[in-house]
Length: 173
Image 1 (spheres, rainbow, N blue to C red):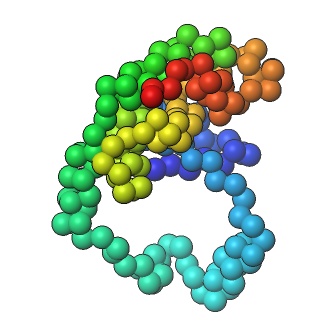
Image 2 (image 1 turned 135 degrees about the horizontal axis):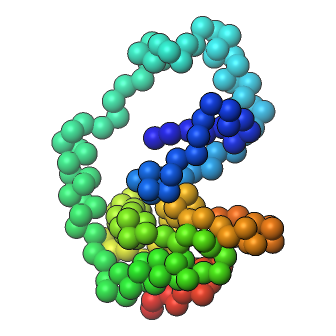
């Protein structure tokens, strides 16, 4: 897990693509709504100290046994050949996209497969659907691709480029 402040990069350096590719997701976190920010301020005013996390009242919510069972449930999720092809087609299309200088790696495809299985299990299903894959493409891929300068000038970002790729890839039935 890592965080990056998008405003000020002084003292931080962009990671090389090979290192970014090892992160499972890139989640974009928007600024908190006013009421959430006010609650954070109240807690700090009341003595909360982020360096003293043990005093925050956090407790384990899962046991090692439950985690092992969850992993087994995820491993048992079925993936039809059409879904395997769909995941591969998304990667292939990203690699030839005119919007991208760098498309998704095989590691991106593996991450999309595994996260799709986990998401299906979280939804109470024993199989991966095309919608599971579509839902996860952006967080799995957005940090693994590089836009061409022309695409950036056109106003594209990673998510819109990925949307274009998804629109070109045939969805399995």
